[in-house]
Length: 263
Image (cartoon, rainbow, N blue to C red; front, side, top):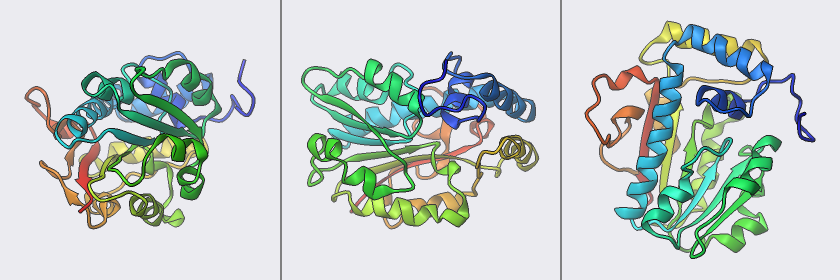
């Protein structure tokens, strides 16, 4: 039974991603689109896993190496343990996290699963990245995060859902501008740079089902960081961003990734 506000006949990126990761919070239409994309890109489940590992490494390093103690995660998706706040609070229990998504199914699970360490805080906002003010001015955010102190802003596999016509670069700039000096921005974004034909087929499967899905070039992804300073190793394939073990072929996962610091 679908929660209120959910159409089980329309695929949603969060539920497709959940399917790739082996979750159960998805409908037949999500599995159908997910499988069609796997037909185009057999390594899709691997890529979803690599994307998730990046989140863990970025959260760990932003807390341990950059001193970040609060995060704004836009486009959270269905919770998959360990979540960002769990990774961060293992190192700094006082870390505060605000999660944002627009899928009612994510909302159902977020309230049950995103339980914080008692020294920190973990909250959820139902909002859409297309309206940054609705996120930044939400009382849950302003009560949880101190926007005079550095924030880790994470946009993980979310910007692909915004068409070029929506001008996602201006949307991200509005979020960046609200962050204080010392904040960090982490992004992953699918690309056709490594395998144009396969990615084109996967995008066609998604758009044919009524979704917006945009694969972008390295140059287009770099624009999202504005004038912020990219941390080492720069804008690289998602598997190559500070990997814990040696990666044989970083371009096997078709995502660009990077983390940048606001001067």
